[in-house]
Image 1 (cartoon, rainbow, N blue to C red):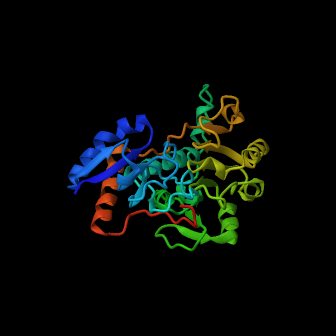
Image 2 (image 1 turned 120 degrees about the vertical axis):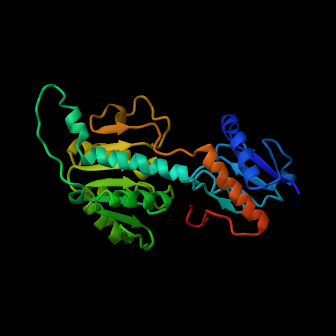
Image 3 (image 1 turned 30 degrees about the vertical axis):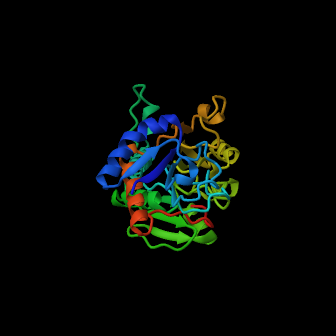
Length: 310
């Protein structure tokens, strides 16, 4: 029997995903009709991006699951019309891309590369950075991405502390949780990496009080969500020297407005939301596997907990 899959995303995404999804369905031996326009009552699965025109899920009476193309689900999880299972994207290539970006910028700050780049004027500056074992890294958020980044950094020799809302045990990472754990994690964070989801509980988790708990001169790296940081508090901490440098890949408004102070601040590095992107080929295989599971009565992968918001 043919499985009807609605691709509900932008035209640009359709052009990127049409061929990889078709190939992934073939590899999984799925008989799929993949279209961008199907009668709602005939749709079995929705491959979805939150900026899609589909915002009311009520007409999709036969739909078995909504499969998000993005890792973040804050743009859809609160939709009261979405009553069917919702799966977020956990793409191995997305995880790998995040690991590489985070490791690269942690090493950049650790090796003080910016310091040396600023002194390429014939000035000999024999300033030796500490070893990784002498530079503590804290990661806020121990989901798929935070765990992978933390373990990679631990393998490089950094002492890594990871914070999460609930208790976790992860090989190679010293884990803490709760409010007391957050205070302890911040207090030792010479390099702080933010990889929390966007939820009401994580809004402005890095506010003025949290920034004040960091060791003086700490580096802040945010490839997670722009809403995790109080921008004004961060700028004040940078000006005061409490924070030595901030490398930011995500922002409250994207693209980052041309007149935003982050662009011109000498202690801020801006990257244009490139830390990790879903790759169509590998993401399509994740989607196809979930549809196969749905059709064979197996549990879907990466289901979203509506109460927690991710």
